[in-house]
Length: 333
Image (cartoon, rainbow, N blue to C red; front, top):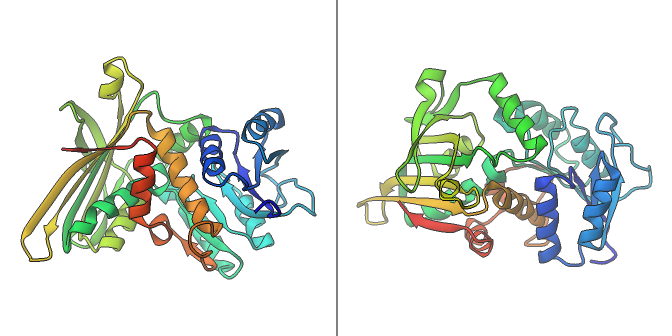
């Protein structure tokens, strides 16, 4: 491992990048990392804290990212919005895996087309899901006790002080500017909802109800197609979480409701909350780290070139183990 080329982390000195790098360092102490950002001093501080890491400045307006021609990396992990897709182009040009989290369902088209046009160049993990795909993996882990699933409902509550750093806030603003419509699956049909129809209440663990709405998020097709559920809806709300109201740190709550039948054909339903007392940041970092681990072949074989999503690469049971290890709580609703 010590002789391997490093993982290039674009935005590696931001919130998601820093926490992801820390997880990868804990899991794989000898894995070389390159922390890339526009602020070289900040990136260098992160690299120094990690150990076995270097820092570089990048220019996202350039296809070569402003890096030396002889630079070599084992993967490119992008934790910020790359509107020119130069991070992806750089990975394809060098034949190494690529992961991104900031495109969102509304911006995913150019990224998917670019990945498809050079599908033999490298594996591309599109992880622009809620908390980088971790919610999808939690849902699929809960779904294992079902033989058939009819309905999946998800309600995510994010604290208003926990929307991420500047990059995360910019993502939310960009998506809200593009559309207020929501995407659901209804009776097997992916359906866009007008803003009024997208509104939905979200109940916190303590019974507090928040105004939420269906959002266009890759989690909906990922969960629907992975389970075959004909009815899927993902609602999202931002407000003061119950934990912060009690004077504790801002948490994150994700309610998961499943209905269907068991192996005997009997009706079965389950409702639970996925909660992290430290908010979305550790979950997002964990989702990225799980994807990076698979892309690098550090758990299982390296995936084949082409387009991948979190649920196509990461075992939900393994993700559940890592979530518990990171302090995630499962609370019956």
